[in-house]
Structure formats: C-alpha cells, structure tokens
Image (cartoon, rainbow, N blue to C red; front, top):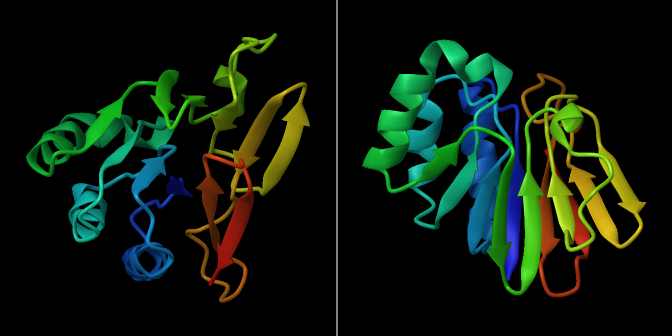
Length: 162
C-alpha cells in the first residue's frame, strides 16, 4: 500500500492543487495529513483525490478546528487530535503534528512515525521504527517544496518535489 504524506499545508491553495496532482499521479491509496491544514478549503481540494484522508490537527488548526472537523466529516475524512495510532497493511503507525508529541521511548511495536510542524525533512531510524517528515510544502520557492510517499510493505520513502 502506498500512502501520501503531507503536513503544514497552511491554506496555500496553489501548492495544495499541485500536491493533489502529484498524489494522483503517484496513485496513492490513502493520504495522511500531519496537521496545520488551517482552512476547510484545503480539505475540499483533497476530496478530489477520492482516496481516504486521515490525519491529525496541528497547532494552527485551533481557530478553525470546528469548521475543519465539519468539512472532514462532510468529505468522509478522519481527523483527530494527536497523537493518533493507526494500523494499515500490517504496520502500526503513529501520527503527530509536533515531533515533541512523540512518546519517548517509542513503543516497540511502532513501525512508522509521521509528523509535521518543523517544515523540515526528516528520515530517521530509531531502533526498528522509521520517523518521517517530508518537510516544507507551503513555501513559495519552486522546487523547495515536497510531500512524501511511503510504501507500507517495504517502508521505502520517496519525496515528490515541486
């Protein structure tokens, strides 16, 4: 199963449209949003992918949390407060916004931790657990933005830059 990983979209609609296109081209089966969506229109654009979107709210979602939750429900998306644990394709995945929300030590049965907040790329192994943040996707510098792909079978990651 190939999932798309994105966070910190911050209502940058030009970039969101590009991300939706990249995920469509990559044929992701699900999308995980690591928070800081900031406006319901972002979710409306992701709904065009017609794949499940799950994720967590970020610190910049607090003011619009109720509207975001209502839109997520309207589009069949599943957003909750972090931390959030999900199981897909035999993998146990922890999703947080701020990496400081990641428990220490990590649970031994975690395969993957996804986070946002820092706007910085991170690919780190901590024991048997992979920690991944594709980095900045809401910037204005062409070529400096990225979202991620994760193959849940192999835990291989790939950045899609734009």
